[in-house]
Image (cartoon, rainbow, N blue to C red):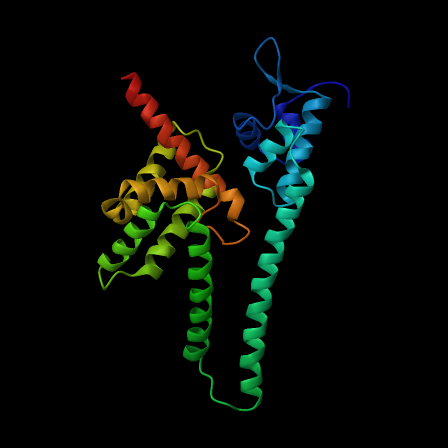
Length: 258
């Protein structure tokens, strides 16, 4: 295909929506040409780059890694592939651990030992919680200052005894799922503003107790999510965090202009 085609034709050819194509353009992943009338046109070079973006995304790379890979020819592709394989291996290890647990329970059932649903759920929760706590500590320690770690320890002691962590985590999962489904989204839109307000409301329990060291460490942690998500599953996708950051920046820009 030697002739440039417009965004509608690209959408039909790739299965991507025009909205997704504009989002990729906003992230600097593709740079379509412009007609005299301002229409986006994709020539062979832009289409090849777009296909590379889609292929890398399907391979599991984050958009930030894809941008770095395609924007800098000096990026260590072998290292990126190795890191992605490590992430897949980590997920495979989690599945293997779950399989081993279920096999152990199945063995007890085969021997007609009593294992009710509550016991099974308790075993799973205990194993998951221990692994998750250990993983999170190993990851977060890299981003928190010594003061930040001490502040988090004190904050944990001050948490109300009736705080429902499971319900709180479920609320984050539900909200981040809705945000991910809405992307790509203009950070200055009314919909983005409403989702950002929900995010801030859900963040309020942390914001009330967070010291500057805690807030700085957590921001650094999620800004660098691509580096550790193979070790620990993040509570929300990197794209959701990038979107929330962009809405915050848009708000601060608007406040500065007023």
